[in-house]
Length: 112
Image (cartoon, rainbow, N blue to C red; front, side, top):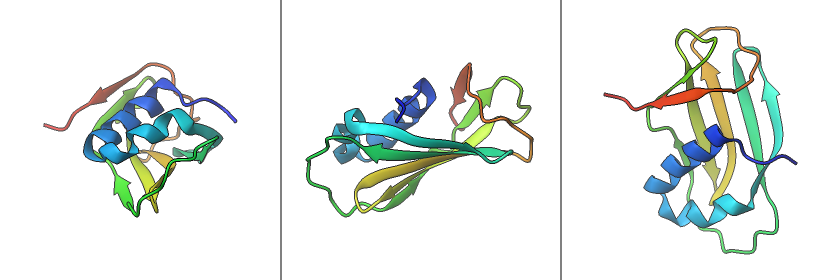
């Protein structure tokens, strides 16, 4: 399992601003898989040594930000999946551009 990267952590901070009950989950999250789709990236998450109680939160979360990333003209969108109180995945998508799924420098641009 891998650690969350800076972009993933930043997006989870946006999630917990709306769902504060999920803030305590972040230290226990690890990446079980990052899978490139050619035009996106699926990041599957797992909990490690988590013993807190889960609630019944179900959400597909995106704040409408655009993620500017080197090599992509239009950047990325994202969706975080929360199922039965667990943060299960982050899905990144390009706007119909080929992308290798590698994240280096990024900038999160808030919607106007």
